[in-house]
Image (tube, rainbow, N blue to C red):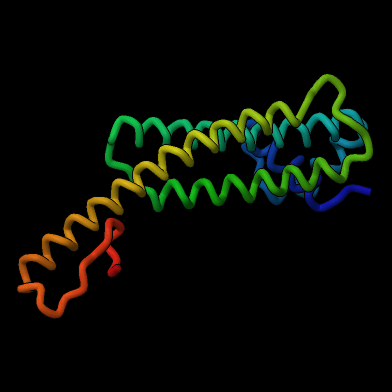
Amino acid sequence: MQSSYSSWFIERQASNSGTGESPASLRSSLPSTKMKEFGKEAHTEIIFDAFINAVERLERLLDSETAMLIEQQPIALHDFNHKKRHGLLELSRAMDAMRELDHGYPGRDPKATLARLRMKLQKNLTILQTHLDAVGAIAAIIARAIQQHESDGTYTPELGDNGRSR
């Protein structure tokens, strides 16, 4: 019996193949025809390919965001966050579909793929944290400047390095 995740990934993989068919027609025809035509091995291959594609899309997105941050280019973090959330949902679904397979992945190692993704996530996190620290430092400088400009200091608490009262 085929799971909903497996059906979804088979449909998604086929729709990305450029056949021009609508997702609705693929949903009804693809699982039965592909499973009968290619069997269990092809089913495993399609699910594993969907997993690899989800990881590769996330890696490209992370590489792009990290490069833009390093090069100090203007960046729409909201858009990147939306795309990363979508990519992680897709990856989660792919991993759920892979867990439902009752056999291994001959000749392919999902752990190596996930380790590569983890390294890129760590690099992205480090760069984002550096930028957040810089924003915090700038905010503290601005807060201190405003405080000094607007007050004689009699009743105002001194701000710490992070822009908060001590």
